[in-house]
Image 1 (cartoon, rainbow, N blue to C red):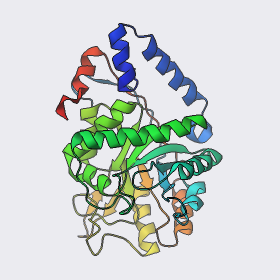
Image 2: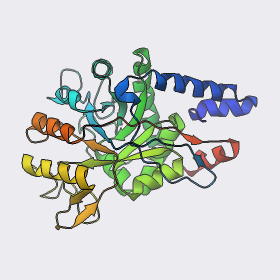
Image 3: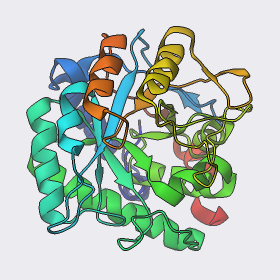
Length: 327
């Protein structure tokens, strides 16, 4: 059983395991006390175990998670329609103050999540309010690690005062694209998440990069499918610069959603049918006729369930495998 890296280190220094088991008991009590929606069995994918790791069991159901983003405003600026989607999702990812969000916006978002009984995700990104986290920003590994830990700590701190706990982490904008296409960045992100809390599930574009990063860091991952974004023949999202990157027709969006839910595949822009290994579906207020689309998708997934996870089983020997000497 593992805890955030700082607590694990303290436990090793004192030679005791009481703090570790205390964390396990704390987590178990909180998970048992969750409402019916969050108590549903998870759809998170288990990343292949890194050498020397013994992965804890995950419990699968026929349902998948439906997620959206929340709190992506700042000050007087609000993201139109984002809260209207909450009745149709099982988890919501809250902006942590980097690409969007501020203390009061975060608090309001957490109140909404509590009201609807949703799982809480941390929506992390580059510190880029002006560019909404979508501009290309390149940080060193240590800078990126610190930025992620800062965001997770901020959201987690406010959430705990409201009886909530972060269960998943979803990158935003340029960082999301990097995690999908750059294994080094994906690994930095996954290790930072693991250092903060190995119970967290890392959400990202379904693909081999996400799985490999989860394996390297010893955390669970959940592949994400988009219903309003087009894919290439390899199952990768088309870049926003591509003329067909965004699916604008509501009927085509619903067709892709139906294909994902019923057959686990998408039709790529070249006409190829590509299987997609996903555990969560992303919806947002920018979709065509977004409320009707969200309601229809939710009806396609009547047994939708939030992502939950147990961590890898970590001992002193395995702990050294996750050292940050690689940063």
